[in-house]
Image (cartoon, rainbow, N blue to C red; front, side):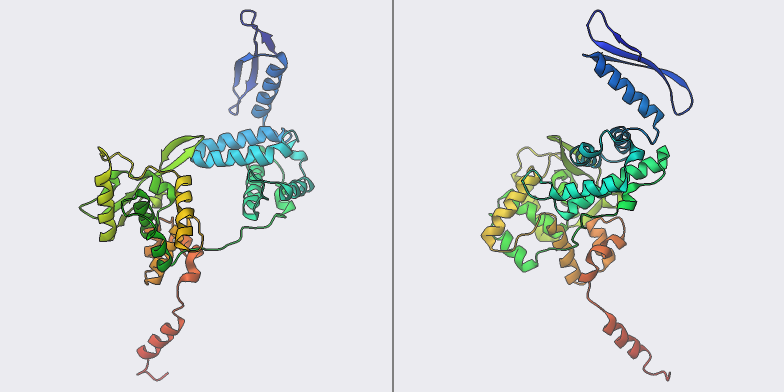
Length: 361
């Protein structure tokens, strides 16, 4: 193992040669190891990454997978994947050779998940466990596509942790009216919750809004970014999808409410954030005022569902609902809300009868 000690600093360093993916022979140097063992461990892992064979340790595959995701997905997606892998997947599979992991190992891991507790000392939900199973399967699929793994053991093991319960919770307009009536009209949260309910924004889209996103002349609100808190730092990124970039026409009452809110902001310019609260603060405010209003508890994101439900109840098409919500395509809207659209079968039959009543068939 080509590890060396720097006599000036007392630290160890690695100097080795490797062949990259193009077949070129290159040199790699890495300094700053306190112990020779640490230097040798780093060199071994580095060379395994370059060789990237199915026999590599799972932790090496996970690192390669995350490097790929960091290059090709949004930062919030990468961080979510990394947190899941670090907390729930690596502790079980870390040192196992990838091609030695069997379907039985996967089933054992799934059984452990069922007995695990989250930070609130509650069992993991079926939906969250399904996300973890999907993440692990994605890692093995990555190994199959890129590194020659013969088979994904997750496909053989199947899903033994349960699936997400598909449910849709939303407020009717009467419920929302009771909720919003508990706020003072000068309260910034009054404006925030009106925007969420009557525009159907995602919470990150609401947090990213700036004064310049409100066209007071045209009466529109433009969504062109989203806000995330990543590792304690606020970051603004492009929206979730390309179609999430959209301009929403505001009802006049909401436009006037937003104008009054902007007038109360100190020295605001076009780049000033419209609303400064965090996701967790909105959630706390929602829980507090839900209790005051005596309405059933829903999540922040369910206000988006409530907006969609309101539009459907008012008779608008799936295409318009899709445009308003910024879904990538109308099929997404129908997958989520199809059961809310009223059946028009009898109306179709009646109109066909009227159209053809003079013909003798």
